[in-house]
Length: 219
Image 1 (tube, rainbow, N blue to C red):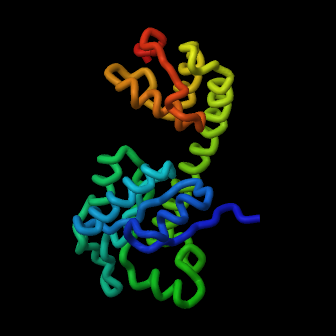
Image 2: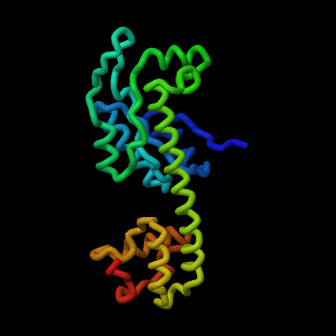
Image 3: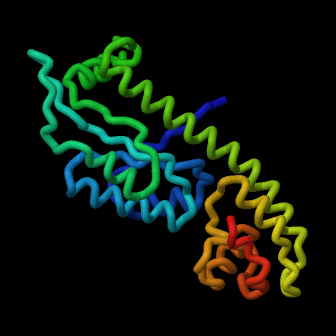
């Protein structure tokens, strides 16, 4: 059995990405970018697309983060510095790794022994190993949160909608799972809240009624 199936998609937000997101149960997306602004612009579009189709973004990986000279080992930020970190901070996601531009990575991969096998203790291999570990950890946290989410969803399903009988404690339980559904945030529009509940339960939003006095606004 596979532990992970990684699908390497082309840049952009075209039909391939949309079709995969809509027809395959994708556990999470990793956005790969290079540090320069033009690449970051495409990465932002990718983030927005995955949010729209409800695919969790596990984080950002910055490729070609630094250039490592094969002759002297000098390190230079030829594509700029910190772009991936800024993108992650701006969008509230993790920076999973920063991968170097190193000729040895290509040479080892072409030879059938990627750096993590050929030289697992090297700095270049450790960049990949740490990025993989962080990605796996992010996915594990997401799967654990999904268990809490399923329990809260089942509890919500037991509530009778249409009669304004939403139970405050049920919403508290949902929030306790750390799912960030923004329920109970002061100033949240009622229509957005109802739409969120509709998405969670797979119900038509018109069937849901909600009384403001039951909102746990102190959370």
